[in-house]
Image 1: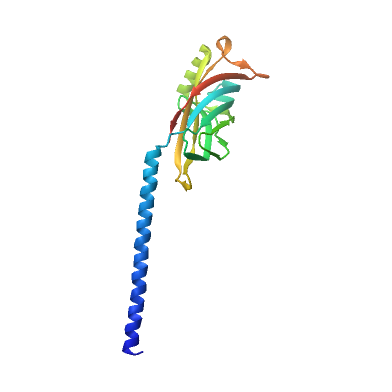
Image 2: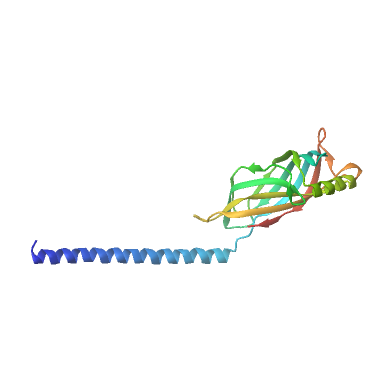
Length: 212
């Protein structure tokens, strides 16, 4: 290859390197401004957490036995509303279960994944149950006392992962944690309504605490 041909090749490759470099810089600048635009839109919109309400609890079984075993069979109705008018919510995973004095007393029940559009409402009615679940001794004593007094305070919890959708942009997954107090009365003090054989329904309309 002659000297002139070598100079030509060096100049040719040099132009391509400069073009690639300018293209990469332009792409980085575009992505930077796109990210800034999304963050500004996110800050202006100010996303609201979904609102959850525990509407009712139907008790099919709630029996404590010796030694320190609890069998429970509950159906809960949970109302969820997306309060945002520009953001959708993907519920990728959502499990519900019951606790007594911070101890889980039922298995987790999965709610099918769903998408909640702007201002939309979903209502779920899953069954949650636990058969002969061991209860800590100190909780067993408190549970016996509560049942003797005719009232038990449970906590219905939901635990899952959500994503937010703004136009065509979808965020990463966020942890959703929901706590709904449920006050259940028994015996002559009961405020429930008999619905079928050995089942009592309690209308609660209890607002839940939501953390995202």
